[in-house]
Structures are given as C-alpha cells and as structure tokens.
Image (cartoon, rainbow, N blue to C red; front, side, top):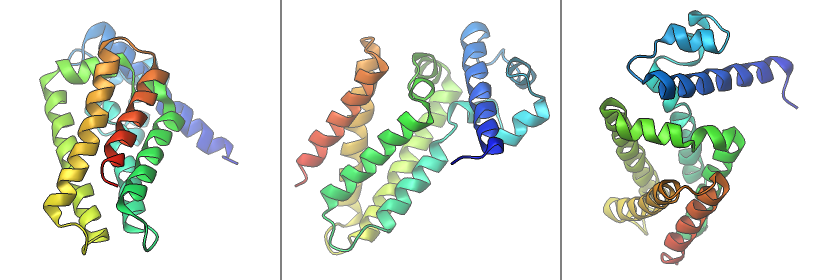
Length: 197
C-alpha cells in the first residue's frame, strides 16, 4: 500500500502537469512561466523544480522512467522466450503504465496539439522518439544476439513503435475517446507483432 507521503507526491506531480497543460492551452507554451504553473498547482516554484527541470519536462514527464522499465524487461527476459512474446509483454506493460499513470494526461489532445504545434517541442519529441527506439533496438539485439542483428532489431522496433504511434495519432485526429485510442494502440501493436511470429 502506498504511504501518505508518496500519495501526496503523486497528487502534486499530477497537479503540476494538469496546471501546465491548462495554462499552455490558455496562454500559449512560450508565454506561460514556471512561476505561473507552480501558483496554479498551489505550490512554490522551488517545489516545481523538485519534480521537473523545465516546462519541456512537464510534457515529457514519464518518458525516461517508461523507457528504463521497458529496457529492463528486455534485458531480463526469461531464457527461451520468443521475441514476439517479449514484445507483446513490453507493449502491454507500456500501455498499462499509461493507464496507471493517468491516461487522460498522457494522451490528452491538448498535450498532443502542443507537441505538434510548438517547434521546440516537436524537435524534443522527435529526438526522444528516435533515441528511445535506438536504445530499445540495441537492447533487443543484445537479448537475442543469435537471432537478430542490430539492423533487424531496429526494423522490428521501428515497425512496432511506428504502427502504434501513427494509429494513436490517427485515432486522436478523428476525435476518438481515450479508451478507443488506447485500444487502437493495443491492436496496432498486436497486429504488428503477429507478423513476426
């Protein structure tokens, strides 16, 4: 069971993210200050820096943690586990992480619109996407050195991530509910992985 202090930290973190998204939508990303985000979440600017290093970090709040969890799964996969089974587990874990963290925050249209419309955020998102895919491809190659070379691993990871990301964007673009978006991502991943078996 999570302790009171940990629950309070989670609430504060979510309050900062939600305040930032609201202010970015109302005022614009560049025009919103860290002090305004902190005030809207009813915390000090110093407290903001206990959770995030910058405004950018608010929008990409859990990418590093999620990537490390996925890389650990790949590195520690059970001996003899087929590649497709491992990738399906990785996708399920990643999707469940999104739901657990807060599906509404992670897949909010406001967040997606900001990332797609602010050049600095587009660049950051693209950098993080390619970096995480390359790191995952390297980990997959190292986990299955006799079955995949690095380029094959990169092809698999690129296909999987690309299918899921594009499907999510298409579902969000047509205005689907968050639950439909989440299921669409799962279906895209499952279809892509099924072709590996």
